[in-house]
Every structure is written in structure tokens, then in C-alpha cells.
Image 1 (spheres, helix red, strand yellow):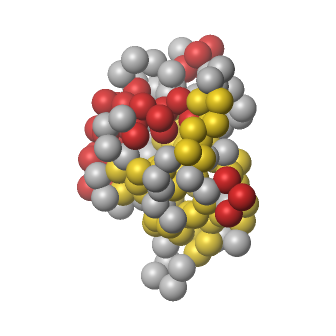
Image 2 (cartoon, rainbow, N blue to C red):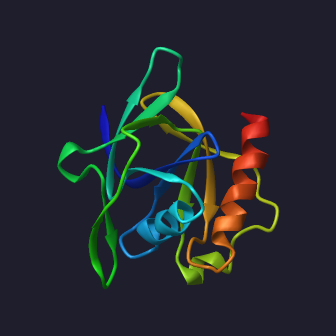
Length: 144
């Protein structure tokens, strides 16, 4: 088991692990996706484990299960999904770094516990981020 500084959501039948440094918008993007029907798996930290199908599973750290930080507001308690397989990793970038993202990125992978997962560098604070994430789930899940 690996503890990763990330937020996990489950949307459209897919698990998405959102990574990035503090303040880059992990919880913000998760909150906006939850408004569209996503379920929170865990906020701030998720425990990741390889399973017997060669897939990675994420779950919330027990002490913060069902809680999400709403920056400048407080901690919100929400219903949550205890566990989800990871289908996509979003590596959030800052606004400055987003200016250098490729328009048509090559497929990247992230390896955790010896298992490769599709990974996408992503700017999570732009207005269209939820729609782009929905598209990324559709596009990348066709390849996975």
C-alpha cells in the first residue's frame, strides 16, 4: 500500500486520481466534478494498492473519509465511495505551467506499485476543466 498526496473521485464508471502540489486545485476540481455527479473517494490523501487483476485501487485515509476541504470555506462532510479502481491519473499544473501544455499530448503513464496507469498533465482551475476531464475519461478509457 502506498499513501499518495492526491484526491480521488469516481465518475462515469471510472476512477480518477488527481495529483499535484498544494493549492493547484485538486479539491476544487473534485468539488466541481461532484456537482456533476462524481463521488468522492478521498481528499488530500488516498491509499493506493495493487489488486489481483493487475489494477490499482484507491481508498480514503480513514481519518479523513467523507471529508473534502473547500478552500476559504472549511471542511465539508459528504457521502463518499469507499474504494475505486484507478483508470486515469491527472497531474495538475499551475497556470504558468499550463501555458506550455501540448495541444495534442502523447500518451503518458504513471507507475505505482509496478502497475502503469494512463496519466495526463492537466490545468484544473480553468472554467472548462470539468468538461475536459469528462472528455479525457472517454478518450483515454478507449485506449486502456
